Image: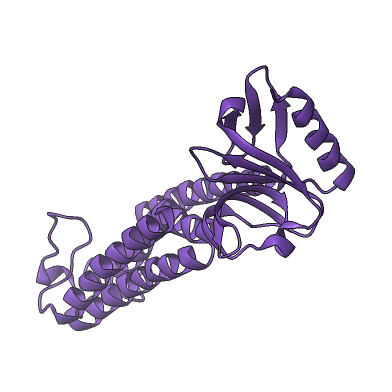
Length: 261
């Protein structure tokens, strides 16, 4: 559902901005940027060229949004990241791009005439803001990738099993229908489609997956490492756990066996 939701949002925005691009191409009066604002014809030296430039700007932005929707089906995290980049620093880039288009075709600043110092100063301020937001976003993305690639922390509680990780969960002992240690890796058991999960770096798989062999599952595994713990649940989908070190997986399995009533 998360994949579909992100794709729908991206494609709706792509259609919206694509419509704005088409509107800009078709307009006979100058295209404006802000909702409710106007650009008077006497402000623009070449209205058709000005509108085409605006149309290209919005078309490129719409194409980026459409690509985000497609990427979300291939890798939900990548699609979400691209959408976030387009929404946050992307808006700043749009503002700067529009200012340049306006200044290029403005009668106040005809091409070739030296521009006022106020316009470059405003552009520099927007560029700095965009750069700060871009860096912040990159730091956030790297942090999410590191968190996603890290192995889960599994705690044995008095009444259940706590898995602390991205897509983490607490499983009450009363909800465990079966517990087994499978000698195969998760890729051998069967991983097919990521529904809402992480698979960004290396062999790490976390989150909600489905396949013909296992049905709907919640994974916290290294896909190519054996063995794999399977926890069958009464009320929810089965949980699979494995670590890079197979001995660590075996040790966790023994701890769960000893603690479970």
